[in-house]
Amino acid sequence: MTATIQAVIPVLRDVRDTEAALAGGLREHLVDTPPGERRESLEQHIDDAHDHIHALDQRLAELHAHQSVLATLDSLAGRAVDTSRRSLQTTIRVAWAMASAPANALLGHR
Image (cartoon, rainbow, N blue to C red; front, top):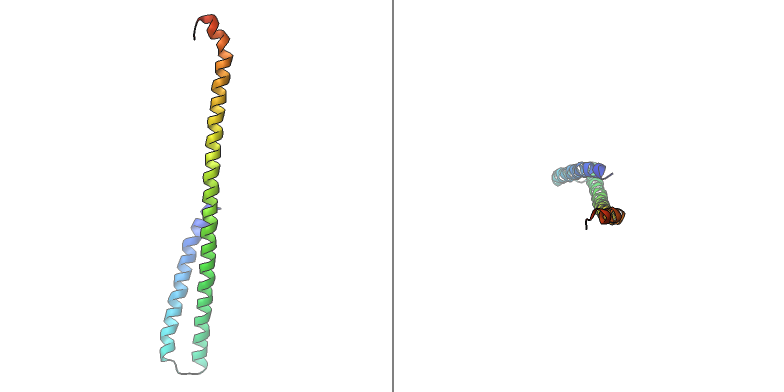
C-alpha cells in the first residue's frame, strides 16, 4: 500500500502542475477576450481548473497524512518485533543456563 501511495503522489503532483499551467494559459487568453460567450467559456474553464487543483491539493494532503500514519505504524511494528526478539533471546539464554546448570555442576564448570 505504501509503495502504491509513493507511486501515485508524484503523478498527482504532475497533474496538479498541469492544471495550474492550464489555468494560467487560459487567464492569459482571457485578457484579450472581449465580453461574450467565449469569455464566459474561458472563465468557466478557469473555475473548473481551480476546482481540480483544490481537489488534487486535498487528495495529496490526505495521502501524505496516510503515508505518515503508515510510516508510524511500520516503525512501531518494527520496534515491537525487535523487543519481542530480544525478549525471546533472553528467555532462551536463561532457559539454556538453567538446563545446562546440572551438567555444568557435574563437569565442574561454573
